[in-house]
Length: 131
Image (cartoon, rainbow, N blue to C red; front, side):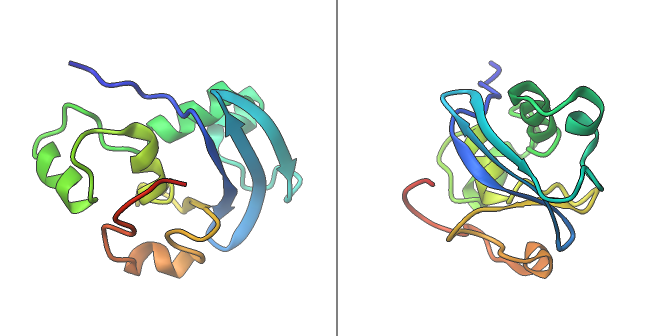
């Protein structure tokens, strides 16, 4: 059975390597703020091509998280410190990175705080609570 793949509440700064692209906040499945920090330089495809919106950001994150039908999913979730599939938590725990490109999200006080840490952080990056 497919799980929900929607961001409900998320706040962070999108980066390409160490270049800050934009700050955003999603609350109750709505994009309530977005501040361009780079004149759209290096923005990922979804917001660059389709405009900055909740949908374009959610679609971006959908490409960055393991699917709920993936082989060995339970082992992956255990390694990430999750007991069940949770799309939003997976985005937070992997900093929105997918290792196929150089985009990632910096969250205040959790996970990687610079690009080099994306490759070196240990999982689970936190054990309890959410941001």
